[in-house]
Image 1 (cartoon, rainbow, N blue to C red):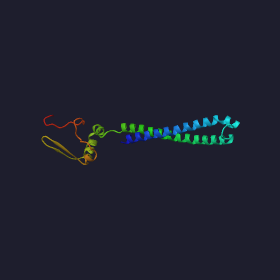
Image 2: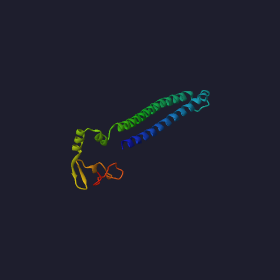
Image 3: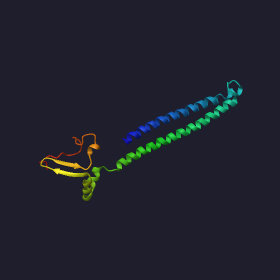
Image 4: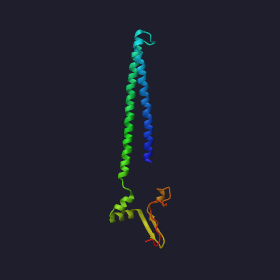
Length: 159
């Protein structure tokens, strides 16, 4: 779930970055066009005077600097998002599952885990019932036991 949200955030940031980069390209194109009109303004054949054109060029250069800062901020935010997704993946791999903890634990630790999680175990002739201290239905919306769940159903006379 968190990974899905991070990917969505990453996609949004990429889209915003692209939009800001397009704006930088537009400003650069405008600057190039205005600078190419300087000779015409010097000769008086351009509708704007040389001073007006120079002022517009200065203003567009200031806009370009601001826009490039925005792009840098967006790139940094995107890099931070990518790092956090990678960190999340590494962290998920480092955290052991309860099954791994239980299987690799010594006997006393297993007893503590069982004591914390299980209220009672009823053993009958053809059935074993485990009563947990927590309600597993709150955590699982899907059925807990299925064919490929990795659990081995108890069958009498199978030992």
